[in-house]
Length: 526
Image (cartoon, rainbow, N blue to C red; front, side):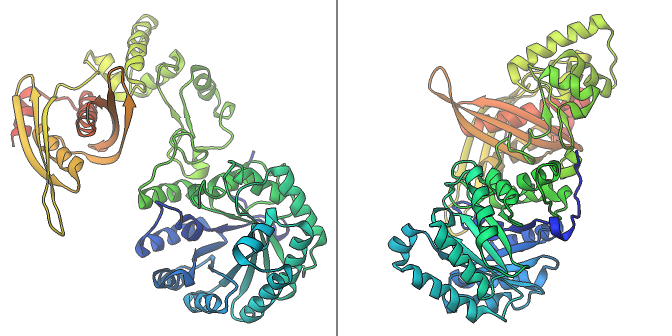
């Protein structure tokens, strides 16, 4: 199966319309600053999406300014602004998009009975007249015009055909059929698109577009079914962000088209090797995380722990991977060593670390490995080195005795932490440090005490139910001397758990860089 980006012929091409900066950004918790929008827009251009919906110009002066700035800086994709059918919205979009090399107006108006009666208070005839007036006003100002029949999937089929034919007659180049409330399913949506392709009067260049929401978890499936039904544009967002349960996930729908050209009659021009980086950047910009099992870009998307899967992967990666991590720009396949892993995977990892134990020694190491996996879940390379070299790989030699957190008042408050640790040789050691937040301040104090400097890559914390009361679980990933190391710990409060996870990561790193106690103590003291 193909796993690389393909440039299809014009007849087989699906345009990718990215709405991360508009539909995605307006969802609660995903708001971005103008600088962040610009940064993401550059990545979307590198991804080679066809259209970037940069925002809703009439929504606010800030949205208009952000669209104008994006239009001034971004080359390649067509740039688009959303607008209602009001003339002032259309004029606002024209002004914001003025610097763009390729401009698209995206007009929307609801067509379903529930929207016509409850929200618009308009008759069918009034809806058609509004479409005609808006498109007539917009025609000639933009390079392209897209019309969306909001809540199309709950619109009477005869009126949907009439509304789409009206829009095409008055200048729409793209006819969007949104499943606004995510109520449809693949069989239904494919039939609707086949019907529209057959019955809507339109010029040859006019294409149909699908905009599917994920309320029933079917946004990607419905978008792909729409392509099978004749749609030649898919509206989607990075990581599937958007209103309520989100939009069609760009990375998922693009890779489905890419991996299964045998069942989907069209492909995109997206550079799939940029998917991972764009997804990661969006997570950092919005401060949100993905589920580990998220398709294509989740941290487990190319990870394998089960022994039988790992055995197959060692023999031929095609046994369990339908695409390569390189094809989406991911770091690479990971054979995660855990309690489900077998000897084949363990022996391969040991060989990569420079160890070739004989069968009897491998049996002993495998038992120790299984015991550690049962206790801590994932087993890291540092743990294996510790087992092979005779070090204790579990826990940390440091014990947290006390943490005190303090925040100053005022318009620019500062956070301080006092941390006291205990060490078998050094005894009780404490330090006070500041940082951008209480946990960052506590980490700064810990690094001063231990003499180990780390770049914090990620920290995830959550409350878990324990047999007595509750506990907090902290999982951290840090970079130490060029190595990425993970730590995990539980604690009675979130700060203690976070500190313990950092100390555990330090301990896991030590087998690679173990030094005499005197040297370590001197480094920490200085």
